[in-house]
Image (tube, rainbow, N blue to C red):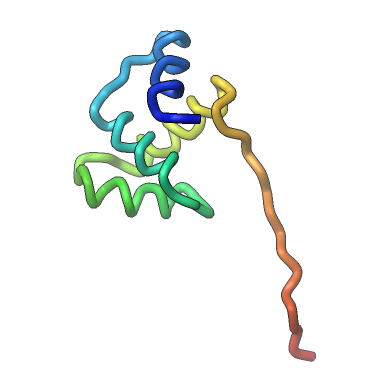
Length: 82
């Protein structure tokens, strides 16, 4: 899904497309992130006024409109120490 499609989906759900949202969308869509903190660290490099709560709200909004899905991932270690 490209950024323009996501922006249209946000607009159709009644959300404004702010500069912060554009930055977050660019970060989210162009990276491989494990958690919201990683997204935040990248976004704040581009706009220091973006807060962690903004990232979480954006992720929730994207989940609500069906753009992303939440997954919980656990991985088995290759080796364990006994």
